[in-house]
Amino acid sequence: MKCLILAAGYGTRLYPLTENYPKPLLEVGGKAILDWLVEDIDSAGPVDEYVVITNHRFVRRFEAWAKAHVQPIAVLDDGTESNETRLGAVCDIQYAIDRLGIDDDLLVIAGDNLLDFSLTRFLEFAREKGTSCTLRYREPDNARLTRSGVCEIDAGGRLISLEEKPARPKSEWCVPPFYYYTRADAAKIRDAIADGCGTDAPGSLASWMCAHSVVNSMEMPGKRYDIGDPESYERVRREYRGIVADLKLF
Image (cartoon, rainbow, N blue to C red):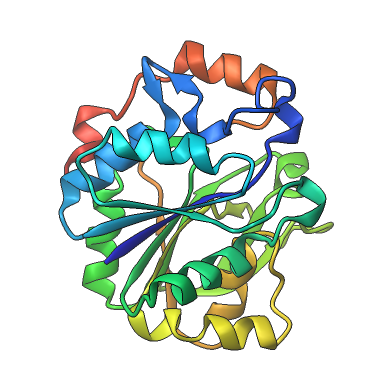
């Protein structure tokens, strides 16, 4: 399994903090946001390579970060240099597949989110289901729903729709940017792009995929911390305490 880390954004809402520094490498609780994610995923075992897809402005920062780790980490420069010219998350995924010749299951994550539960649960869920999978959590605030990816699920937990930033949310289920794609479904990503799948938000790929394959959804057993602006970053720095021990258990 390969873990693709989406890190090609420019973090414009966090300027000037991220004007010359990537958001996933900001410090929370004494280490980089990305360290919390990689260390947890690495404890699960199935990932044999991490791939950071970033932009030309931040590639050197990520290369220096990768050199300090024992895990096999490839850093890819998608060639963009501004928020206006970014490729979009879905095109970045396909770019990594093409550049590295990836033909494997994929764990795709945003590099700027934190969780207080272990992703080993999610990987075990995906193994048991044998399908592509997403996470989901309940969000009662309608204003937040309209800024998120919102999904519908059937009685068995299968994803039946996912809409990014809906004007009229169809449910209270939000899908955070953590996705598992089987090898067979990862091979469909080029078709998704050709078919008109949205390419900016990573959830657009899961939206297309659930109409063309089986995608199951796991309810999160804990919280997600999204860092979008200076206020939320400072709040996360105050509140985040890492992965809750009892949430590591299956």
